[in-house]
Amino acid sequence: MELDQLKTLWKRADEKLPTLSDSHIEGILRHRSQRPIARMKRNLKLEIVFLTLLYAPLIWYFSISFEKIYIYYDIILIVSAITFLIYARYKYKLLYKMECASCEVKSNLSVRVNMLEKLVKLYFYWGNISAVLGYLISVVISYIGLFTEQGKEIRVPSMLEITILVSIGAVFILLAYFVNRWYIFKLYGQHIQNLKTLLLEMDKKTDQK
Image (cartoon, rainbow, N blue to C red; front, side):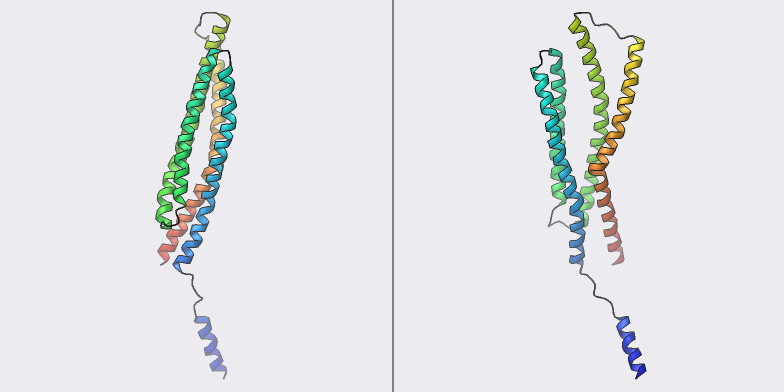
């Protein structure tokens, strides 16, 4: 009798637990991938709102200013705004495609994540370049405007003035670099890392089959 009970227990221990189907696992992975994508879409919308609230008053202020030199600031802001809107539209379309319900999860994510990562890196580089160009252009416009207002002839800046401007610029650009890096990672970088981790999990699942 005890032997029969032992055999029964052994058979039960040897039985495999019910496994999830591939479609169910894929559904779980798809749901996990949607979270970082949804957050990036939300962050992109917040960026558009924030920059609209920031740029619109500045463009309006410079446009009504009596100083003609301020028209150059208006041009810079308008060009920057248009460039960002083109970038934002392209990124939003990419994020929308990453949510494709009918696409095969891994192949769709793998291609789109690589594209998104390159796009975000481009955004990071452009942010740093814009900080340098913005500072240089602002210095030139302000320097010319100073002499124009006083009705004086524009002269070449002295070595002391150049040293001061370069020192201020170096601090500003360095600070802008670290702020930009933190900003990009907070809004997009960490979510891209989550998606890449998810892709690694998918690869492990494929290898185990």
